[in-house]
Length: 89
Image 1 (tube, one colour):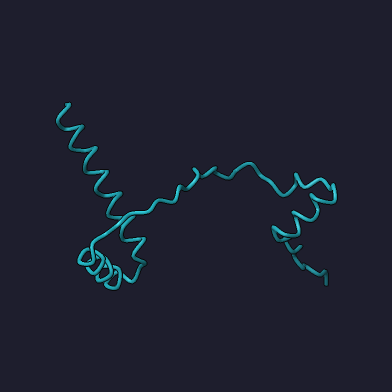
Image 2 (cartoon, rainbow, N blue to C red; image 1 turned 135 degrees about the vertical axis):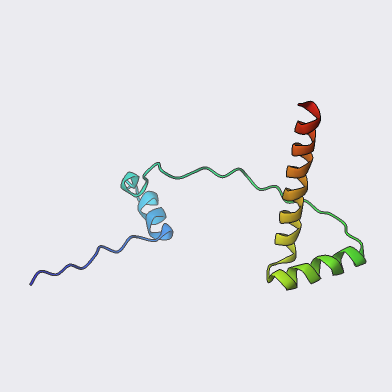
């Protein structure tokens, strides 16, 4: 019976080591990936009452405070653009 063991894919660190030693690593890239835009960190000040509200929602949804803020901000921006589109139509 033939062995059907699969080849283990190298980790990112192993690929990096190969690249550093001058090996061709092009076989590990499919060009099917998607480039993600850079993330810019910002500081925002919130009042204690708003933080308590955000924390309560985060607990209720079982997600982080940051996830709540990002989700609600995305929804607000979407509503803004929909309202602007409706006015300009």
